[in-house]
Image 1 (tube, rainbow, N blue to C red):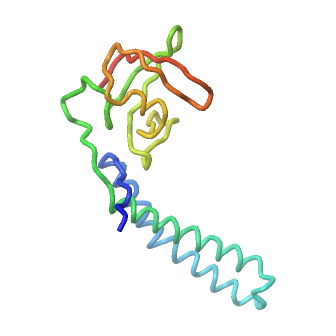
Image 2: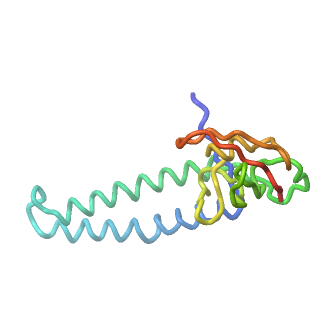
Image 3: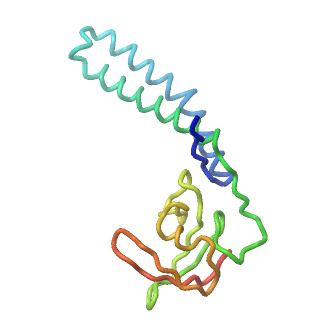
Length: 158
């Protein structure tokens, strides 16, 4: 049997997934079932757009529930408070600049389940994070991105 993929995340990230799962199971699932029931009353299901739409929503909700259950079951909680801030790793916030003259940027390295670049959280699977993990302050790192290669200098790790 194949080993399931592990999902590194913070305790807060796991709680957010658990809250979403609870919402889907207790509220959204019931809403979709009710929509299907109402759409069935419209008659011929072969040309019933409301029924088709409700069934598509049901498939999406059930798929998301399955995904969330797997992510929660295989969650690996990362310790954000570990005192070793000498090296970039999951849970650290890294400030860096693009060499030679880029602006400073800061991101927290998180698991893919929590990634949200607009909120300052990038996945450990992203090209920038992969390049920085294991590195220290002052190091210049080459990053291979879809747009080409760039160099960044790590300014701080918190």
